[in-house]
Amino acid sequence: MKRLLITICGRAGSKGFKNKNLKNFCGKPLVYYSLSAAELFIKKHPELEIDVALNTDSEDLARLVAAEYPEVIYLPRGAELGGDRVPKVEVYKDSFARMEARTGKQYDAMIDLDITSPLRTEQDIENAFAKAQEREDLQIIFSVCEARRNPWFNMFKIVGDHAEMVIESQFTGRQQAPEVYDVNASIYVIRRAFLVDNPDPILWHSKFGVSVMMDTGIIDIDSEHDYLLMEAIAQHLYAHYPEFSAVRENIRG
Image 1 (cartoon, rainbow, N blue to C red):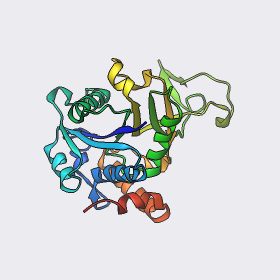
Image 2 (image 1 turned 45 degrees about the vertical axis):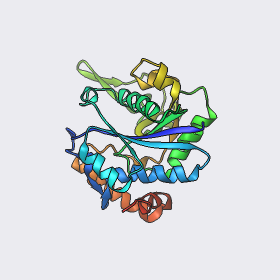
Image 3 (image 1 turned 180 degrees about the horizontal axis):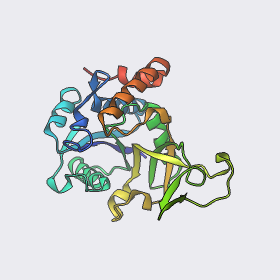
Image 4 (image 1 turned 90 degrees about the vertical axis):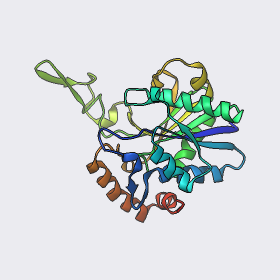
């Protein structure tokens, strides 16, 4: 891969946590953490041609990004891609097609960094990108963390008037069951072929791989409680793991 597009995608508003993409996290704008991690990755790869784009229907978010990261290309999101029912892959395809048309380049792949994942290190991006480099047969690399529950051992579903195992098995210990992972929605590395030639809107219908991240750094921010808990975790990580504090220290402004 020689040409990459890094995308930051964020909707205006939020049902679960109002205007979460505009919040400050540990004193800095939440979106700046993704931009800072992207900048560290770009600095580490001078051999690559990398552009960064923001796809959003929030003018407030666009102004916030432009204030400190003016090189980021703003892609105003159309109404047809608004709301929470539109598959995010459609936003990815829209970003990719518009950036190729705008720059006249063909990107080899896109790396999407979720705004609500501020506790992501440059090495996390590096690991996901390296996995994509190693495995040309994989269309997508998902960032994941080790699951704390396993559907073959200690997860159950309600069937009628009782509960049953999600997947029936005879395992007597979790270590015997197949390894499973939680998709943490922090990093996606997606090859051009999927974005240009694949009409399927379901990401995991492709042949994909995973890149494992530290699970304590990832919580879906869907409420004020999630947000406050993640800030508390951040203080621990910043104090004991330099790779996390490096992203915060690199934030502009």
